[in-house]
Amino acid sequence: MSKPKRAAPDGSIPVRTKPKDRFPSPRVDEALLCRLADTLLTIESIAKILQVPRSYLYDNYGDVLEQRAETRKSKLSEVMWHKALVERDSRMMIWLSKQFLGMRDTQPEVTSNVQFNIVCNEVPK
Image: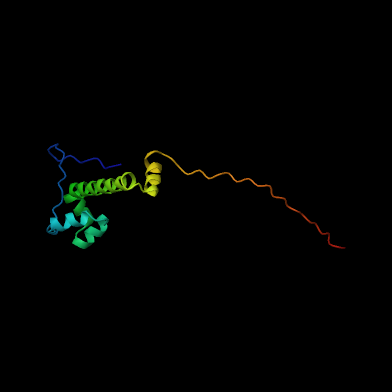
């Protein structure tokens, strides 16, 4: 639970202000950020390359990162559908049918008659 706010002597509730940054905002090369976001790098990796905190990227460039990720996903999806439908790749057709149509492999039930011979040897007393 959060603490109740104390009222000032005049009865008003103080407004909490955001603390000022102790450090200046880092400079980010936006062209490089876009190129990195188009790759399969994680946000953590991009932040390390650009030498900025991950939270800074999310706060200031979150919309750019999300838009680039969606573009990358749509391109990948387009290539997968092309491979399945135009190039007639059966492996891709099978994978897409499992993902989008809910199909799955069924293993045939193997039944066999197995006989076990149990031999009991008595230990002499």
